[in-house]
Length: 373
Ligand SMILES: O=C(O)[C@H]1NCC[C@@H]1O
Image (cartoon, rainbow, N blue to C red; front, side, top):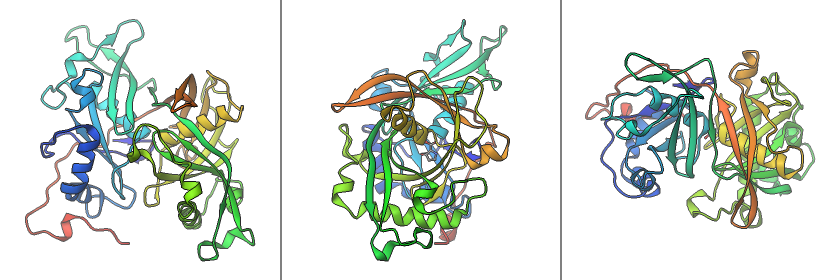
């Protein structure tokens, strides 16, 4: 499937049997079954920016009846903890799926007759995400399918601003050409199921406009910024999450341009972002988890009120006149590990690109997956 051009290659069958909690399954997949990620995400089947997901029908939250399905996320680097664009795609797939062999909890989904929508609860590595998929029900069969005229939305795990206006010292070995003679870069850090650095392009020494970004130069700068951030124990201490140490790492640097893009209906404003995540993949979608992080920052800075909807574009949604932009709305204040957090409602669209079977032949070493880097 794709969400504003960002792929999600979804494994719904054929994955080895795994037991344990979702985070244990994630660790086991990394240690014993990483060849599957490499064969699906790397060349020759995938590419540098491919993204994937593995459906996990048994997890502790599924078994407890709190979630309908578990999910592991795959990047070019490894296994991410949250993914909004894949959440939107997978929840549509599950609403359309009638096969209980693939989706054992399918019969627990409920069609809301009044709102004409179906709620799908996904257990993802960072917690429980509630997605709502608009749907159409057939009066003959009683079956439903996703209604693609309306957006899918999901309610996030608690998101929070972790640090505002932090100064990152850039050592001489990590300077990039646009930095000029500056020795520090000022960043915000926020959590939206994963930790994000968020900063406007001029903070890196680039023009404010993301209309025609120099992606290679921005990738070089954000990679070096991330290395400089990670080199400081004091800065790394901002990546603290009370739930689990698996969540405590810097996932992405998000470069933003406030004000750019068409606001979606009933949205108070718009902005554009370019997200470099994992090992410098570029997100084509507006990045759901990054939207959560950016909304949490806006609330913390007093720029956004509860209930205020805002539009978030990627360079792809802007290229299509705003189609495929996400919206993000802080809907509820919450407390997380003694600090203020918000739950964010993120809306977007996803489409199918195909259904297929992948094969790796015995002895085909190249076909097991390679990357030109
Ligand atoms: O939408 C998201 O949250 C994801 N897209 C790729 C990077 C993030 O995990």
